[in-house]
Length: 639
Image 1 (spheres, rainbow, N blue to C red):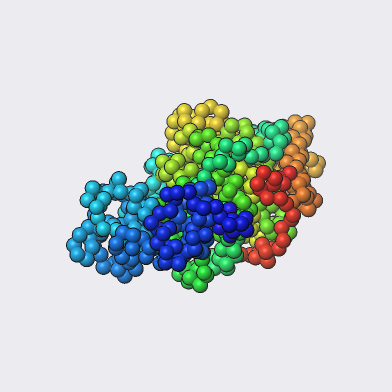
Image 2: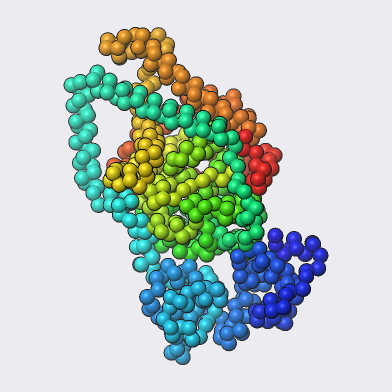
């Protein structure tokens, strides 16, 4: 609840004795803030883990200059602008630049030659003082806007920060070394292709038989995997929230949201509008729009938007690889929150989503360090491809992931509506900057280190990729990342087994091996439809016709299983209009095979290439009214 809501409840109660501080008295005495509003701000502070500075700023009661001037008066110092900072010589300290960035504190030599600290707020100074040399405890304090201080720190330590953002994850858990082995990789692939061509020429039937046996085996594994997840999901009922009685009494935590942007000019205004609908106290929201240095067009567009004080931009130094995880690693050090969330440019989260996430973390045990929300689409009626994509996402996020989580398996994360405990995320080194599916990779790295992920019943709407080639490009990036993730984690399979345990290790194998084998060998499996249609099959000379019919019946049964999962996933009020389209998912699958071969080509020649998804193709659909539903605050319709 903010100050505007508290005003409607009547006159505020008097502040308890001693509650007023020097800042309060200064702002009230100067007429910047009324005494009544100051008491309301203190009332808000009792339920929010936020400084009075942030509350007053977020509520629009003061400007940043008002606060900095007040701090300067209190500390008998002065406020600085960007040009003033550039004139002061920085002092080298042992404190990591990442810590300086997080607290927005910069040690400098003042113009009279004495040491000084440039700070954005008193809280940052107090948090960092124990890590600084003792002399800074008595040093003069100068004041500047947070973004100005952080920009100066980033400029001074550009090389160290640029190097750190691509090397945060340990070598053993990263794929960054692949760039150094390009010639060996290409040579090995060429040799393998030549060997495959020779085997195909000499033993075509044997090769086809081997591929068919492997395809059938992985199809059965995939079917068992889906059946178990589906049955577990059905047995467990709808996803429900944890009891919040204890957590509701605790102050809400500060949450930082990272929104990576690259060439997103078409969707920027809609993005800011959607973020402003979030009902979480704005004094606890720290939204960072992560921009690339070379993306001048997006930066110019953003400069023309009047951002609220709780939304700011961070510009990532240009470099390789130019990927989303690299940008997020850099921006992570600019975050203020203890919870880190991820949204994509086209996301439209439910208004109360952050509150539910914050309370869920407070109620969850310490080993639950990640919460994954449900992803959905706001343009499912745009065309057939958008409808099928929506059916697929409904099955994955509403059936498969909850089922896998209840089975105690590690789950691959989605790239957005992810929330982490910051301390755990930093211990893991953030994201692998070179992995193009950093989300799936991080999900298994969390599990390897003993952490757990839970689903949280709140929905974020995205834009369904509704153009065939754009869909293939996006899916090929996902499949390339899946292959990369599997190869990285299987470098030392015995270590992976010890870290995950037998059950999760088997789940890891079943998920990746079956999923990748199915898309690559889909044409082999399609050949068995010839049997059901009564047409000749290449296996006829070697396998009895009755056995072939059994195989054909097996494939038909698995198709019925897939159809049942899809129908269940879209049986709720929100997706019921898609029921008639679920049977057409059989014709949607071939696009995945095309994407798989593109992914394999890129894995060899361009393993770190980020084939960017184009957004803004359905802004009209995004602004259309969504189906009526209650908020996610314990009453979301997820049927």
